[in-house]
Image 1: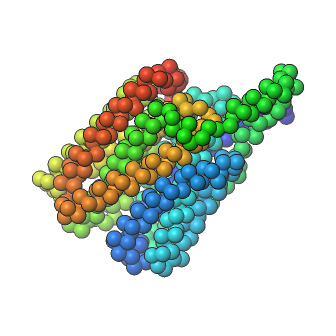
Image 2 (image 1 turned 45 degrees about the horizontal axis):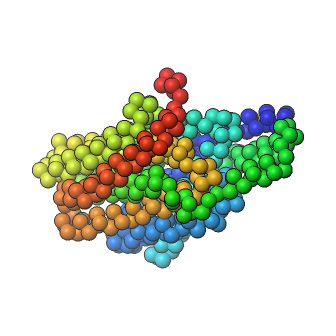
Image 3 (image 1 turned 180 degrees about the vertical axis):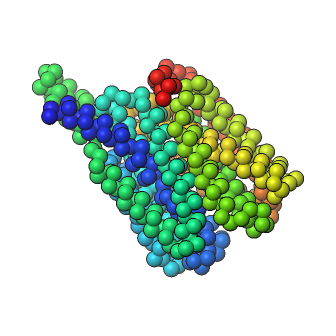
Length: 444
């Protein structure tokens, strides 16, 4: 088998395995639906301590993003992602066998380590695999399939975890550990795409008569710039500001809806078993929107981001107003659940669109630094807006309606301004580059 045939074989296999690998390693599955109940009822933590654990996860993500990029700078993306999965495994094991708050706090740091490594490296695996076989334009589609796998697994996991918890509280964590092991196995079945890129450079002098100076120039071009130079891009800075508010607002919306569901269960408006099914429904909506987001992007282009954000604000405001008048009536429950269903469905495409813009509009030598900075900024947005929401929850005495309306009034203006500036920079600088979706995808 020639080098070219090996390259085609292994990179096409990478691309086929990427949706499963990305989907499973994107997050720990089975855990989040029952995590609050597990820590409070099985491990003896207070509700305030569980909130502090979330804060530790957020702030450790902020602190670890750039150091991890520096530490893993010379480690191949696939190998680094496999190491990141080990962070997930340590988190799960510490949650199973831990007995005190300190142990669970350290577990959050390992979880954050896994998140950051996976966030920075996973997209590089896909990008490089596509690039080697000249299939760059399929990034949106394959990335969307990966998120679809994740949300589908999470949906099934939400239902299973609810029943597993009632049978044996630690069972959901053991199942999550099994998923991490499956992800590792898939990773070992893949090949490092960068190896084939290096081979192409090494054989180039023989095939094309390049001289040493030309090879050195290629190697010099591949060296990444400093963080200061990466941040010199106005497009990238505006994207960071937008993602700070968008990611933070969406995290808060999820937390607020979880608070509403817990209140509905306590009020007797919905049975406990329905809790897992509602979350499963939401995850399936995210799976479908992830899988078919390229059609949405093909139809609306960069206006997709505007539509997503308008829907986000309207859904949050409507659900807040309905809560004020009929919080737990059948009609009120249906409307609030439907609003949050829409928000969940539209959240995933935004992430894929922004990932795509980064792949196309940022120089390949800077993409790893860009992802590490973006991860740090998103965690900061999560932490900052979550702190504001927590203050509002206390101020309005857990009233979901007034908390939601007030929060969106605070977060909406900067979100819209950041979005407008980001879209303007995108259209002005990269109008020809970001439209890279193939027309034939419409028929898929």
